Image 1 (tube, helix red, strand yellow):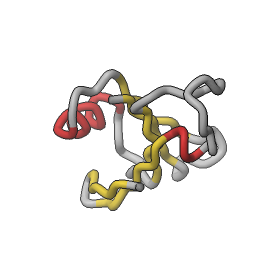
Image 2: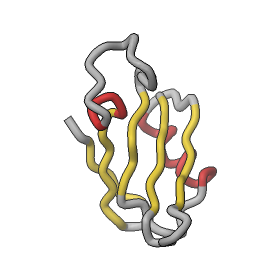
Image 3: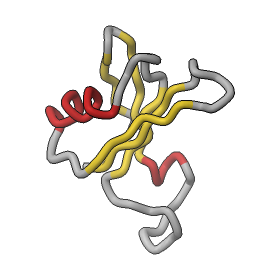
Length: 81
């Protein structure tokens, strides 16, 4: 169910957001069809760069990179197609 891709030569993994949170019904809080969680992003990844990369996989509604406050090495993001 998870897809694999590379950014900056680093393997990243995508998981449908609803699966990550074990949401089974579309009416549950937080459910957004087409939203994926991206983990293992390189620390230099920026929102615009990620958007350019992800547009190759379909119509991208939005995406963004999240950096953990305490650890700059924990980089992940979200995208919605």
